[in-house]
Length: 473
Ligand SMILES: CC(C)[C@H](C(=O)O)[C@@H](O)C(=O)O
Ligand code: SF4
Image (cartoon, rainbow, N blue to C red; front, side, top):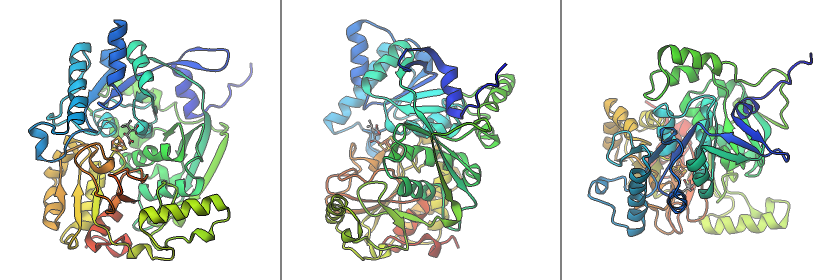
């Protein structure tokens, strides 16, 4: 009998969920978990209503509001913006009508959908997980196949608990070695995107592997998988290991006792087989990574903080030169400026990339006993109510407040301009989020992507700063 073909982590989860494969390779996949938020669900529920169809598996579905809500005290008094209010009220009506479990705005478990999925044990290794949101890739950190889907697909999953998918190619990004001082998962993923570009992962599911990835806690792995979508990939994943199992243990919706032991036994079989073939391989050395920051309006436009704003004429082709010139104009930058000379108006620590308790701890360690620079507005927005509670139990809120940071309620907040937390035109922001597109944090806003440690350092310094000079004291 022929040896079974060595398979990747992605292949195994895919094969396990195929209901049927069509002649052209398209597969009907069974979906284990469907997460729903207010932005991409209204038309989907409307479609079900029009067709008179119920939700097939309400028990596999969970809804939450995160994008359109305020993260200050006004969340208790109702949403003022009519469009945002309509989004939230529509979801609240739909979950009642269709019997979908819902985490209300004022529930302690409310938060950014990609923070609460893993935190509540709704997202588990080996699962297929979807949400009408591109950063669903975050959940791949658990060793799951998790990806964003469009509104019509949200309707399809609500109605059938399945999804039609074209197979993706396998890509492996290996990060060997140990991270240097001041660097975290965010610097790894910014360095990866800087190297492979925003199209580097197109058509592929990326498995992140290597010593530096294995050494990361789950929060760090989530940060990396979160931004795999910014590298153009369909999804990102990390093979489940002891760190994963330890994380899952005791989560409210995770299996318990013997069911957990059985699940762990299966999860142990998921990592890519030795000899599994990847269509594309990229390798980085962790030692060579420096604290990173973006200078342009695409997540691939990153440099080590020791760098200077690039000169458009230093790029080879004309199209890129013109693009870089446009970016510098938008960002209000001059070629040759030192990145550490760029004054910031706002610092945002939050988003599904970096708002977990581990991120809060890293930022608080740097802020402890220091003050936010004059003229800087700095805000810390925990990713969920449970992260907020945990941070408060550890006294981190006090550390932030004493340093002059605002301490907020959970939500997407200033990651994107869909709620009251926005930049004003021309404001420069050091942000732990994942997208630096024009207008992303508010019209005319200028975003520099960086790690929570680097963001805290920028808040204290009043300009982009090298976190290695702002180590905890
Ligand atoms: C609003 C939503 C559809 C969107 C996404 O898909 O990612 C948002 O979360 C984002 O980060 O841009
Ligand atoms: S925090 Fe930002 S990236 Fe994440 S889901 Fe919300 S808007 Fe999208």
